[in-house]
Amino acid sequence: MFADDTNLSCTGRTPAEIEHKLNADLSNVNDWLEANRLTLNTDKTEFMIIASKRKLNQFRTDI
Image 1 (cartoon, rainbow, N blue to C red):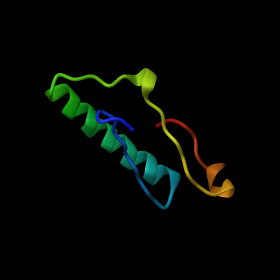
Image 2: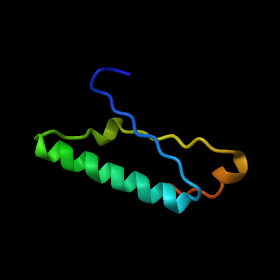
Image 3: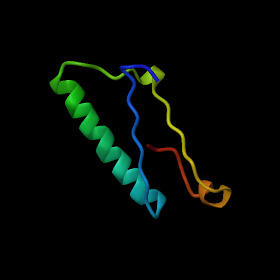
């Protein structure tokens, strides 16, 4: 990680709960960036899901 890197993490009981929390966090990050006249480089943006193999099959990637 570099000084300008950001990391979000989230836990939840269901994929829907996690998706809701992450989208709310991303909305807050976007609001802060706009207020400070900054942009997020989406080409450099990645995400990783850590879960058991069984639970991983429940996730879709609409985040």
